[in-house]
Length: 220
Image 1 (cartoon, rainbow, N blue to C red):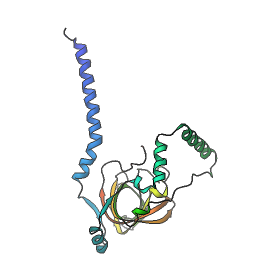
Image 2 (image 1 turned 30 degrees about the vertical axis):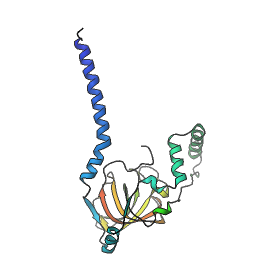
Image 3 (image 1 turned 120 degrees about the vertical axis):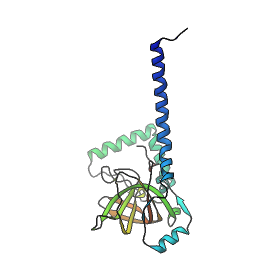
Image 4 (image 1 turned 90 degrees about the vertical axis):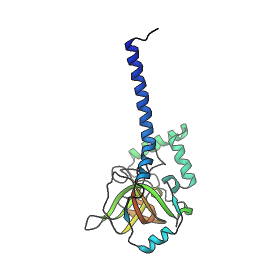
């Protein structure tokens, strides 16, 4: 029995739609990592501190993600938040109502850190939020944050999800919409600014472009 022209067109449309969705998923999943590998060596900034560079080169590197900066109990709580139980959902709604009606209400920000990471040579991707700018318009210090718009369009993340970075000279290649991979030695020190408070600091060694979604802790 021969198919009608209308049925053939309908089946072709469905087939192309399925292929398109599949191709889009592959693009979203694999292209960022391909681009990251291709542009891996394109350093946009390197510290002028030769001793720091040498020490970093001689130290084992630990690539980390934003969830790694959270203590285990906070990481588990964040997972529960993504898929809340009925009780957790009610608590979230109650807190949201309280926050909306009481201007003095603020959930306590966490400054708890992962001690095992302090002092390590790390690399971490994130977005740059400028704090201090040199006379030549280069960035002297900044917050590294997990998602675009943090501290600017959206409230700041908790302190243990922000990293303060101060450069010896300045960074001139900033695009606030572009995520970057920052390499350096991680430390623990509270830094407060009107834009937010960080519980981590970083002696930055190198800045490179990052292709992908830096934040693995939250859903966007």
